[in-house]
Image 1 (tube, protein in one colour):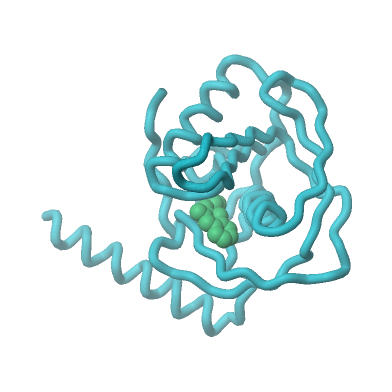
Image 2 (cartoon, rainbow, N blue to C red):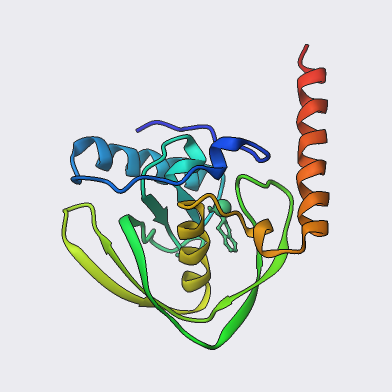
Amino acid sequence: MALHSVIIAPDKRLKATSKPVDSVDAGIRRLMDDMLETMYAAPGIGLAAIQVGVPLRVIVADLSREGEPTEPLRLVNPEVLWRSPELVTYEEGCLSLPEHYAEVERPARARIRYTDHDGRMIELEADGLLATCLQHEIDHLTGVLFVDHLSALRRGIILRKLAKARKATIKASV
Ligand code: GNR
Ligand code: NI
């Protein structure tokens, strides 16, 4: 397995639309294992392939509690089939927007269809944090970040802070 580095916003690669996967082969399974390793190391509860620079419709997630057995989810070509009319608000974070958090309102439940690591088609109805997490990951597949659900003012503040923090790190490393 291998760790990837996570792309930090602002970065135009994060705005790309990811392409569907043709077939779940060894390369895709390897990608998903590497993404899980990267996500656990961060740590995070979800990761989209585009965050490690791979523009394919692949996401991983794990919402198991610390100290409990892991429950890795590997989703290829996920699609939202249905969104509940009821909404819910969670404080969201993103590995591509480190140290920034904001409340985002989304459908409380969602029905999702995807292909698993064995190439089988699966449907699941998610609620709670899993519903929020999977919608956050599926947003990444069309270049949407949680800050895109905030006002332009709040988005601008966060993205400018990240751009400034990056410049400071580059300067410190020369
Ligand atoms: O680790 C993460 N935590 C999180 C918290 C609330 C809502 C969504 C998330 S996903 C995020 C990891 C990430 O950036 N996934 O794309
Ligand atoms: Ni994210």
